[in-house]
Amino acid sequence: MHKYQFNTNITALVSSFLKDRAQCVKYGDQKSSYIESNVGAPQGTKLGPILWLIYSNDLAVPGFEHIKYADDVTFYTTVTSNLESSAIADENSMLLNAEKSELMNTCLNYKYNYSDVVVVDDALIQPNAFTKFLGIFIDDKLSFNKHIDTLVTKCNTQLFLMRKLKSIGLDSDGLRTFYLSNIRPIICYASPAWFSLIGDTNCERLEQLQRSASKIIMPDHDYEDRLGMLRIPYLSSFLFDSSYSHFTKILNDESHPLYSRLSFNSNRTSSRAKQVFRPKRCRTTKRSNSFFNYFMTYHDNGLVYRT
Image 1 (tube, rainbow, N blue to C red):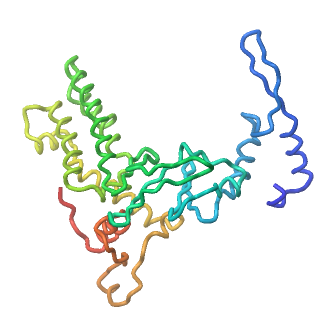
Image 2: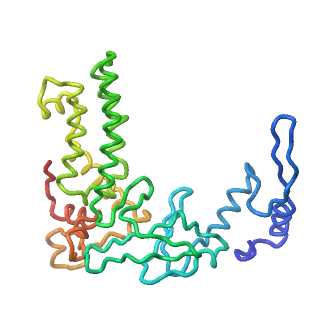
Image 3: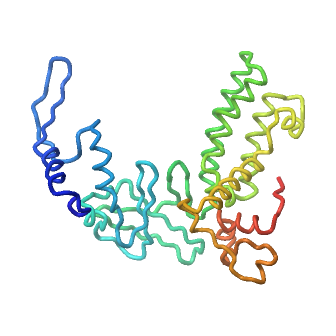
């Protein structure tokens, strides 16, 4: 608070509020002995969230990038040599949890595969083939095979339940609602992050989930007819539309945190051809199929997505 130039009297008052606190545990008529608490703020106070924002406002470390989502903060950096100590701990008086630290080589060229362990605060971190980040499995080749495997497993469980519901008499409208509320959301979770990067095989695996669900509802019709009667688009089209909708949301909001990732065209010649964007040249297919490059190219060319 002193660093942010709060009034000294207010700083002293808050300091007094946080110091010399004790806590115990009470269960029924029994109460433990008191111990002094020298960290944190009392739960449920109006000051708690404000003090946390002040404390975490400078949560940045030289050499590390960070991503914040709600109460989840992830630091990441490119590793080229052993990390003998935690810079995060040094900068913010916070301890880096080595058990929650992941090491993954995402270089697409096997020649430069990095397989050495990394040392963080005397803990060894072994390289992994994939890591889970905010519910998405990211693998070292950016194929999202592990993520699709997980989606298929989860959805097959829901399809089993869907068959049970039909066997006890749930009608087609109820089964359709079950699919739209319990299965498709599992598939579509955070789809802009991975949809443009998955291959045709994985795309077909996801489509097969919807094909199976629609067959449970209407087993006597072919897939295209079932989709028409159920008023459901092809899953691949739905995923594409959801991802493109997210792209246009970013495009139409200059205050969006990802707006700076858009590369607008400043070339007068190509601008006459209504080329709004100028995507960076990519040396790999993976890079060209990444979210921003993929949809900037789509937006410029006015292509029609085909299922």
